[in-house]
Length: 320
Image (cartoon, rainbow, N blue to C red):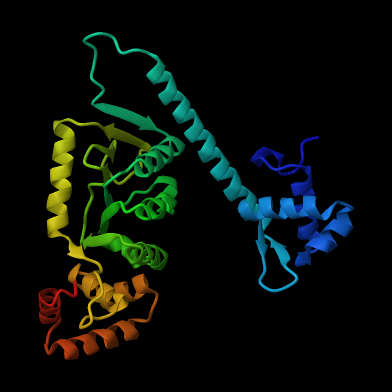
């Protein structure tokens, strides 16, 4: 009989340890090994595997104790990630199959490719970024795959190699505190971020050599993307990004001795993008009163009477 966690790639011991933790949360390794009559090394390996899978959390302190994630949520999320990985594998297999078939003489040059399915799209996005050498340019706006923005682990990995990231964000999505926190984390890691009051041309361009755009720019996610290779269409997309970049408002910039901190820079940038105090407060995870107070303090520091003058003076001083 297949173990409980077999369908997501975990074995008998992993399943037994997880079930034991569901029955007795906060157990430590020796307690688990004794209860299951298993060697400590096998139980330790199972705990590592369960932690990596997000099914178990290690608590701080000594001895280390472990608590299980709720099975209805954790196993469902793990199954979705497993399905996405399988979709990505199928996409890779299709790519390999196409590479094995020689193009007919005088046939199409392959200027565009159609990528179908959430897993295949996510796999292609990861592959594009991990292959970047100089720059990744992104326009981020809804609708999103899987219904919400996804963590971009590849971005942090690629930025550590010195690849430049430029991102333009649809300002309303930054009203979500979690999204705003993710963006500020990326900015702290080196991303150059700008916002526009509204933008509907979702795209990613890598090294100005390849781009990916949705099949449709409508409000409904089609789960299909078009991969664009060097062509007049790619040149047009690059020009569109450059024009949007010039129009967009910087979200944050490098620190200067006479400038505000990154949180106040974000307040100024979001105001410049047309967001009201309540929306800025929600985006930054603070109260509306805190935002109003910070704006008043910034206006006094800048020596201005209106918010428009504050945005203008902040831009002149290089705070944006």
